[in-house]
Length: 243
Image 1 (cartoon, one colour):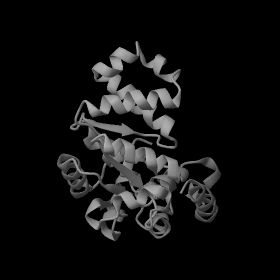
Image 2: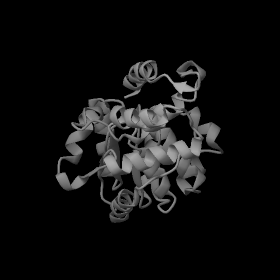
Image 3: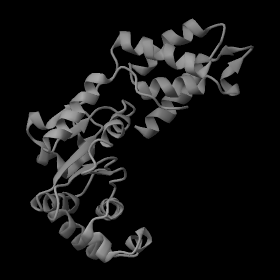
């Protein structure tokens, strides 16, 4: 199902303003709320922001940064690597030294997405990057931000946090109807299903998209009706696993 941005002008503008200021911040909100989608929608205007889609380990982070710097024609990276394949063969320690050296030579910022409870050593490396005069921002899912682990103290000030929330009831209902229109979902009990979507999703756009997508599967249809109860049970099982 194609992704699109619905009713998020204020949130996009808030992210743009944060990136424009060049100061580190923590973008947070529940899984499925659209943090990554919103980030990607504005990053093209900020080529100096190096976006790490997978920030599971320091090695993956440095590989991602190295690839982006090489693509941008960074002199230090061009000197160290012929192409992106050469980056993959470098050890974590060697890559770290090259990347930190390259970062010191330019005005860059880093955005870490999809972090998985980083360790103390991961946080220490982030501090090293910041000591290299490179601002590091991050994305968190939990309202308490446990998933950013040892990075949380780096964003202790309230002004360093930017929250993306679920839709309110009105926006959620509009989004549901727009998604139904785009997907062509139809059923005799569609109005009942819409009400259940709003109840089950709590206004979370990712959950809404998932529920509507599932409703098109044959296993959740009977005489063209949507089988709401089994769909909801499977949704809760699957959604809970990815959150």
